[in-house]
Image (cartoon, rainbow, N blue to C red; front, side, top):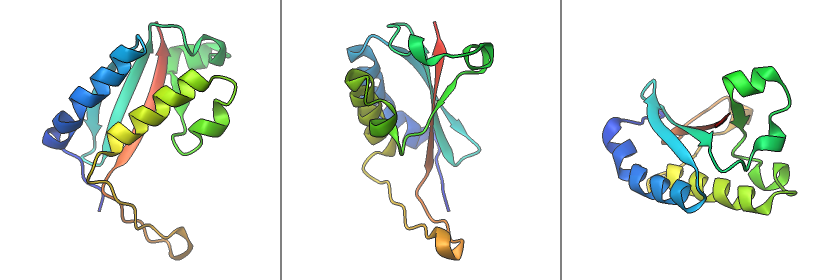
Amino acid sequence: MAYMNKERKNERAPVIRKILKEYGQKGTLSVRNYSTLKLKIKDVAGMFTNRFENDFQREYGLGINHYWVEQNFKDQPEVAEMLVKLREAMFGNDYFDESDAMTDYFHTSHYIDIEVYPA
């Protein structure tokens, strides 16, 4: 069963803050429903400006599919690099995923969620 708590979040927070600072971004890290580590990035550096296509995305944020970062951000290698580093930092050393969608069996250490908001 997926489980995330404040202590596990605090273990990952310094590394995540360091990565955000390296790319000139700001972010907020939180735990949702004791299963998901959520990162809200405020796009201070303007790396995602061309990705906000409509008012809905500007108001409610741009959801990042962390499974497809490299493919979705081929045209912006620096953004892809940052998101890959953030994904790895959010997973941490204790991450595992023994899920099998074919048999409807989901067993992972925790989930991650990344959202980007305009500055």
